[in-house]
Image (tube, rainbow, N blue to C red; front, top):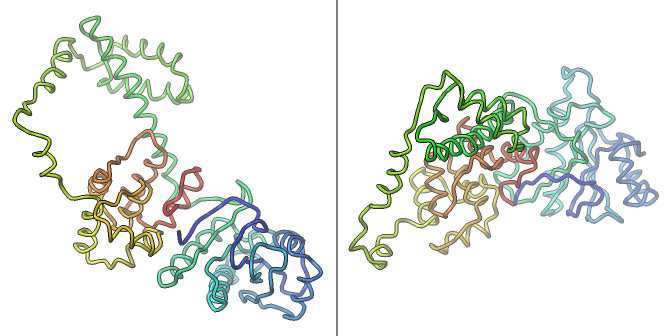
Length: 383
């Protein structure tokens, strides 16, 4: 996995290099800087830091990591936030870029970052997050390195902006609708078998009433929901009815489909493309290279080599989803590709709803989507 986000104390993270939001002068102050000095061994680290001298804003320098689970500490100096009109964003961007270049020169295979300058320097967390992800994405497009973004607590991780504003609403709308359909429509259909005819979920007013009620119930109190179903069934403005007889006939009609004469061998002889075959065909059809696809999917070359060499490769669902995004597939194309691996997108899964939301928005950047997944405590693409 090229890029991942974790919630942890950066002093406890194992990586070749750990980035410190440093003081410009050879001393340490509160925040990440202080925590790193204490964990590494303050006296030894300060002596090495003094050898470097002052560090300019946006620049980076390296010392040994001493007692940390790392080889190096990369010290970079972020800007103090004024109003965003004094080059603060450019300076933070330079912090990330120069730290990555230094890690590459040192031969590092992994590097852990905090959100630079968001502590005592007051840089807005949402802006720092956007800058970090943009720099990471550009760097990883032609470099193999594991980048770990470390956030300390819930308040350290903030999503904002147009891209993310609809995620919660989309999850809420679709999750509630799915619950409404399963707990209200099916329940009313079952009642139709016993009473002959009953107004059920096709009523627009009924669906709206139930949706509002379901939200008030917190989506989980099915016992109280049952009484609401009854109230809705009595609603005078329901505009749809289902008779018991047609409902009972429908399953029988479906079951009568004639499959006579088709042996197991006949079925197996007509197996369509495997997931791997479909993936490789789509890469060729869209004119992508293998490298750009597996990098966009946030997986490493070793995993992709396994996939390419085995036509029967069975991916994890999260891997299949990552490749669908890397190929920039439509929602229908995504469902088809997932289906070839035996998977589907479910309206009961927050992970699946987030993926569906971003596909519908035309947003395919894995790093951006991982931010939303992380905020909603879902597994990340590439894990």
